[in-house]
Image 1 (tube, rainbow, N blue to C red):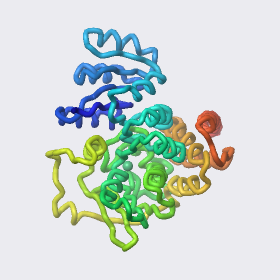
Image 2: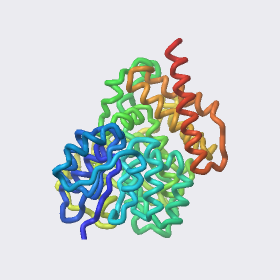
Image 3: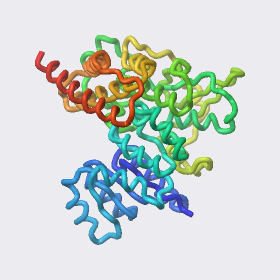
Length: 388
Ligand code: MG
C-alpha cells in the first residue's frame, strides 16, 4: 500500500522538495492533497503533475483561477483556511507534512493531530508557540510527530534504539548563517540580499532571515525541548559552519551519537515519511575531505541576542514563546519588505517580550489572542521606528 501524503504548504521550499521525494519513490508514496497560500500558479502545476485527490488555495480570491485551470483534471479544488484543516484530517491520509510558514501552521496541525495522523513536522513555530498543548494533544489522540527539521531529524535518528536511555545533553548544530564573521557594528548595515544568501542551506525567505539572526536556532532549541523532553539548558548550540553533523545526543554514560550527511533537506523529509525504514537515494556521499573540513565554535549571543531571548522565553514559559514568535514574524516580514534594518528585528522582539502580558497556563484561545495582540503592537512599534 502506498502511503497517502498531505502536504500543507506544497509550494514552499520543504513542500516542493517533499513532492520531489514522492516523485522519486512512486512505489512508496502518493500525494493525496496539496495546499498553498497564494502561489496559485505553482499549485496548479503541481496538481497537473501529481494528480492529488484535492488541492486547497488558502487565498479565496484565487479559487476561480485554480478551479478553471484544473477543470479537465480529476482533482477537487477548495479554498480558505478552514478547508486546509479539513483536508488535513481526511480519512485516507497517512501522513501530514506541515510545511506552511509560521503561526498559520498551528490550527491545521492541531486538526491533523486530533484525527490521529502521523505528523511530519516541518513547521517549527507550531511547537515554539504551543509545544505543551501540541504534546498533550498528540498523546491524547495517539498521533506520532516525526521531525523534518534537519537537526531534530538527526536527534530523532540518534535516538533509534535508545527508548529507555535518558538524554543528558543535546548538541544542536548551527551553520552560523551568512553573518557569522561580521562584527556587531557591521550587522547594523547588512542588506536584505546579504541576509538571504545562506551559505549552506537552500530554504524559504523567512527561515533564511531567522538563520541570519539565529532566531531559528533559538526556535530549534525550544522545538527540541518539546520533541525530546529535555531541559532548555541541556540543549547546547554549537556553531558548525560546514553543516555536516546535523546534531548530536549525549547519553548518561558520556557516549555521544551524531548523524552526519550532506546538507540536503530531502533526507530528513524522506525519513519522516518512511520511518522506521530508510529510502534509497543516490545523493552525494560524504568523503574524508568532508570530515577533515569540520570546524566547531561556541555561539556569540552578544552579537546574536535573539538566541539568548529564546532561552529566556522558554524559561518564562506560558505564552512568552508565542509573544516572541509573533513579534519575530512581523519584524522579519517588515525587514523583507525593506521597512526596517536587520538589527531592528532583535529590538522589536525585545520590546514585545518586555511589554507582553504573561499568561502562565495558556489554552488555544489565549495563544490566538496573544498572537493577534503582539502582531498589532509590533506593527505599531515598526511605524514608530520608521518615523524616527
Ligand atoms: Mg533546522
